Image (cartoon, rainbow, N blue to C red; front, side, top):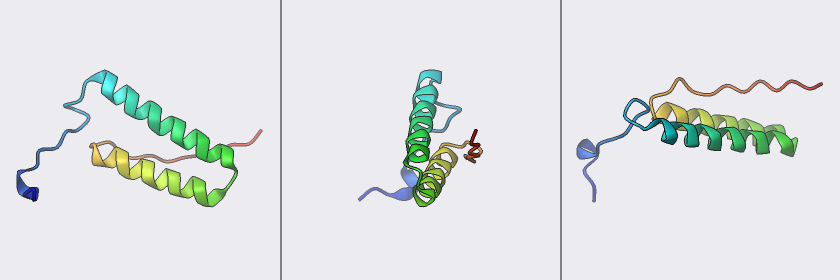
Length: 69
């Protein structure tokens, strides 16, 4: 079993810019797909998961604002 005190993590400051861009593209695509479903529960869950993921890497989180035209 891995000792949690000895696990080294990687944050946005240590990542290559291409890695950050790929992660953000994936988050963006996931949120867009959730929005296309038209189900608010799915959108809320996708937003919460994206927020947690970005915070795990040292970011400020994610907040989604959907505007209809």
